[in-house]
Length: 339
Image 1: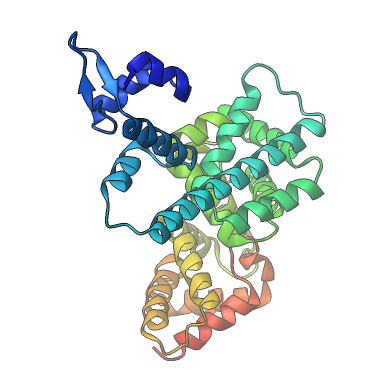
Image 2 (image 1 turned 45 degrees about the vertical axis):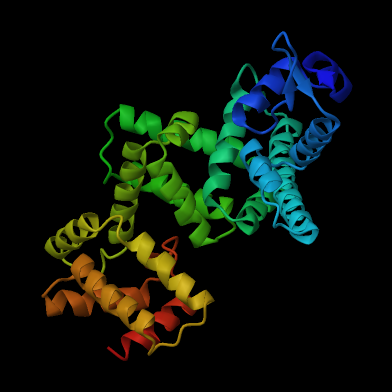
């Protein structure tokens, strides 16, 4: 029989750890001395060895307790659990590797990382990993490898928009519209024109207060840019609409400012999944699409509808940076033709 200090020394753990295991019911001494000291048997020492082995495999103490108590588990089942745990660790290690690779690229490009600046950047990468898939992270990494000044471009643009807002620049003026076009171009450059990825990053920015603190892009800024972008798109219709019609269209567009992104993202998901135009999912999307397009463009005004549709045929810039390309537009039209 071994005293607690002797077992701790042999196993390379602390006495406090053995007390903790005892409190959890994970490893209790088989006997007590006359003085009340804990005494561990060879079987107890063997159990401690198993605990250490399973802990090294990444299992929690609760999981280890359940595994050691489950006498019905076969060796194959125990090994399978160990392999699953190792697979989880491998994925975590790969995430960390990619994260550090992205951060290292910033450092190697000469970006100055003083104080806690590099920790802020690392935290932002972690926030992105919570909402993006591995392939989307890889796509961002590929863009960062290819474009040297991407981060600097964002810093300059965010500062320019902050200055415009601080000066209370109207979001409908020509300069605001120019800033909005710059913003949308840089977004799509950042995501290699993957609008689904752009929508996810925008949603992260709108929903995460911490992300807003880290990069200075807050809700009010996103609303200002999107409002300016709406005015910029409507400005393309100057040759097709009367001033009154332009004001009506602008009002409708602003009322439904953030409703298009999730619908376009859903349409792209249906396209990737190969949904047929007549499928229930596509028919439901087509009805939503038709209702939103009507509400956000012309309402019950047939003359305005005719002019808007003609303008879309003549002005390809109206769909630029919106997430709509020819392939997706045709995919949606096939479903709309059936409602």
